[in-house]
Image (cartoon, rainbow, N blue to C red; front, top):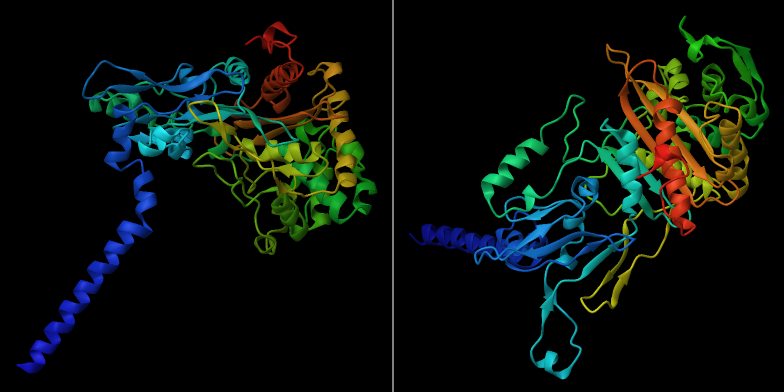
Length: 499
């Protein structure tokens, strides 16, 4: 009997210990995350019971605010004046599906919370209110991208390479967040079903193509391959590669042809403007898998960029070991084909790093957070994320990208006074329709860059190219961004670029 009582006492003690441990875990360890979770009914219900703070664009446009409904059960509802133009960035806040995108990222500022007392009365009776979140985003650039994409799937990113500030961030497909903010569950549920249904290319409107979807970067990756030579084997910058329409690849009888079968070759300076595939494939083989992997990683591949937005995806370049028994594959990887994948955000960071003397600044949407009285509570401080190149190494690449615009694959697209440096890319998707993923990355002005852009337009017809499909969009975005920075209307010089 005594033994049984002892065992029972031990069991009871263990159960009480488990309860105590779980209570500590819930009440203290996990409490902050549970309080902030969009699945917490108490947290999500605040979007209709109390007014949230505003989300404001760089030009003062209100992107999200709470409006009175006159409904006692749900006195407030979130409103999004620009609808689908900025929903991929701003997201939504509602009682049914919680918060999304920046509404989730900065939820702790946007929900009512105790404010520092400004008077003795407030010390005795503390007040709670929400803060406002101010962004670097320029809505007119999203509007320009939306018009230029003309409803086609794609993603566009515009950065200030000097600070990492995101000036434009737009994707198709998109959605109107109005219904997701509704206090009527049936309305929100019907919209949720619609915006989480993939389109013909597999992209959900709720997602953000520019930051969440990866594609073969095609010849835009040749900027990374060029950087690998400049940083790790400068002698290869001067090596002259065979001039011809194709090259043979090691350990195989496969031939790698240049696009269109046109002959090309020479040094890196001669090969980048016309985007010579055979020559760059051989350059990649000379560099080796280890150097290419290290260089891609130094630009941010294989890591998630620190953008203050949930759900950002990492770009991918294979490990050096993976090429050990597949050397021909390395030739295709060096030209951004086959097993290389990138987001538009990552390729914008590649362009920005070259533009900013070899330093890729951490991308960010937040400018600052202000109190209801306008006092700045917190400001974003620009920081370097990656430094793949020295200033001297980056300076070797800039004129090559300028020549892409002067007489290479991007010739005739940009205004001469904008001094654009660019690289085009047309990657084969590998599907039965022989579609292409069409790219362009660019920065301007090349002599003192203040804007960097990447655009990807996936699943284009086989006769489309990065220059012809992504190029006009990049042109309009650069014109618009430079106009904003000059204090002018961002309508673009060309009528085709008007927002």
